[in-house]
Image (cartoon, rainbow, N blue to C red; front, top):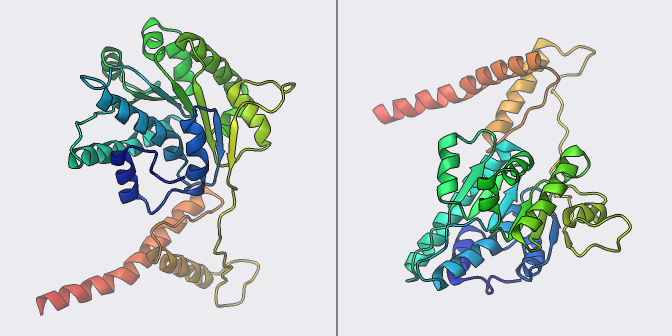
Length: 315
């Protein structure tokens, strides 16, 4: 699927931010645009968040341009994340596309369409909650527990009754436990509150058996036939560059001080040639020791170059 079905402002922002749609996006967007329930299983980094959100953003842009006075102050998309920290990350990740699309609207000569997103969790300050009650966000980012609390309050139900779609991220994290049962009940209550069947979109990097997860997403039982849910599975394997490295001196039963220093120096070299480096150790004490030695290695390798650069500038 190309970007042609999207509004020009949405398509141009996406084209300016990414080289091309990912396989997960190409496969899922037609089903989402058709109003079907969709379960997306794709590797981390495959653009699953925008797979779920871009169609909703496109719909909001078109509606805001077509409606005199712009978008109504009502919640349209409910995004449910199993972790509060992930909810905040998603809200931050939404700011870039929202700002980019608004800029494209201006550059293309369209009216501005301000789309608001907000996070509602147990940590949300009372002042922010009151602000959301007065002016609901178009996209609400929340957790299963906070969704349940909102469904139990009059103000929360007023905000949620206008929802049209719900996105469940990292669905595998809740599908098999009590939180999943609790969330399944909340999703059914959300449908009853809205008076219609909301479009449900599930996202995860790992989902097995995927048919069972699809049933959980749409509320089908094990006795039902294949659930009315489009399943997009693009694989969970990614290319790996795997190398096993050993210290240059022979290993013994106990790592010597010299060998440990060789290991730290090699890790420091790898860290300098990569944007992000994860170092796994067995204990917290070992993590502190590794951090101290790597800091020493970093100073030893970067300080001479820094001093040489300073001398060159003085000269």
